[in-house]
Length: 471
Ligand SMILES: Nc1ncnc2c1ncn2[C@@H]1O[C@H](COP(=O)(O)OP(=O)(O)OP(=O)(O)O)[C@@H](O)[C@H]1O
Ligand SMILES: [Mg+2]
Image (cartoon, rainbow, N blue to C red; front, side):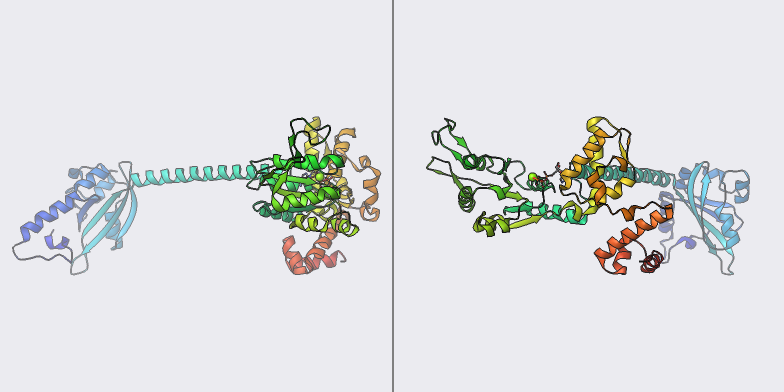
């Protein structure tokens, strides 16, 4: 082989330098990391470097002077890239197995002036290491994915736990309320929680405290309706020893002092006597309390949240509630909608309570599907508390494991429109359900386009369906 065949184009060959170049070439050839094998135009091995033997395990004497066709025949090499290059007359890369090792071989032809192949240079790269790394990478990716899945699972469980931490929130209406509570939890504004009896006012106030920066500090709940009128003031603001007859001889801190650093929940605020309202207003404005019979005022840091199911504005009009206090308490109002105004919460709550009661009483009760309709149609004047009590009663009193409409109390059965629950064929029942869902959605979203989007079908499918259902 002529030396110049190997010289790269950029190399400057000076006269008289040939020997140096020769030795440089020899070094480069043998120090390369990849294996190099050169065959002449007949396919006889004429050069092989040390890396080739290292990678393939085939000694140079097994290759040099030997024809590639014989080497393949002898089974030393599975497939010869050299022979392929002779056939294709172009560069070729193939994976090869040499003595059980995985290699990637690239053959490059060198042409003479007449365009015939004069040499084929084959470059061999060991990819067993690469394959091993690839397998390791795949395994490590799999493992990472497994960990990601596990973390995701845990996160979901945590979310579910937060969710099932006694709280069910399915409807958009109640989710909005919880979002608002979480938002205002971070500031110290006084919050007034409004809503009918049993809607979950206390649940919201507790949630608000838990999400506030005061959550590690006391959460004191005072039911203004349950404490006798003449005791409320001393309970709230405390008293010094000997302040009044019957008082504890050592004096006592009031709820405001006890709640210091935390949250004071004034429940049933609408029932607070006018005399106490005056003092409450002053404490809220100055954020200091003076115990009854005491002289010095005590600085406090208390977040006040109040709640009522009464119409405070009406009370103000009637003169039963101080207007200035009303405005002071009502900085952020949170109104919890009645259960009948957020029907999509009814069934999740019913199931939540069913599970709770099954656990409590070691039962395995379940609802017959007909029951759902009545639960959803009933107006629930006592809201969630009434639902909870009703489910408990049903779980405890029914004979069979399945709770059917025959077990439902009259008041719940009465509210449902009997026309709507006529039984029919499965198709009629399903049509009725579809009609009901579409009607509710249309009421909320107004247009067929938004309703279709919400229901996950195309607008034309919705319109067709509505026509078929005679809507
Ligand atoms: N989102 C909810 N998820 C699960 N249970 C709830 C939820 N809201 C309320 N409850 C349950 O309903 C019952 C009534 O709730 P809560 O006491 O908070 O209502 P309230 O509005 O304070 O009632 P009242 O006006 O009678 O004081 C409680 O047992 C409470 O645990
Ligand atoms: Mg309450």
